[in-house]
Image (cartoon, rainbow, N blue to C red; front, side, top):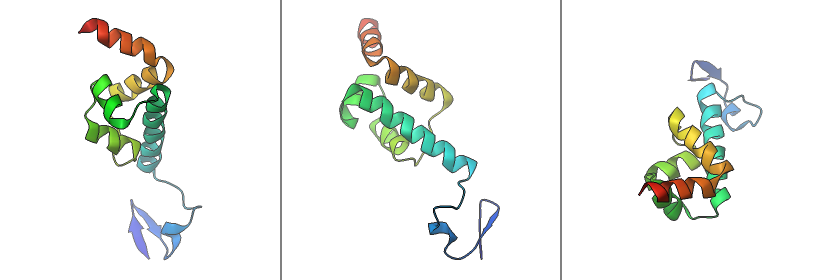
Length: 96
């Protein structure tokens, strides 16, 4: 047996799709989906999306792949981009 995040994991359970996710794993997955959805709403590559919206490319990649969870403000920014990408682009353009 093995211990992962305070839970006892039996051999082979790590590959079992029925093994529940930890809260942290679940949130990373939700954040990854949101980041991918926001970028898909724009139709942009990761590089262009990161440049256009002022996000470090490495951070965007980490978020989309679920390696890291963005801070709450970034999650809100991603929600706005996903729902109104043109409005965000216009606002950023007007601000510069």
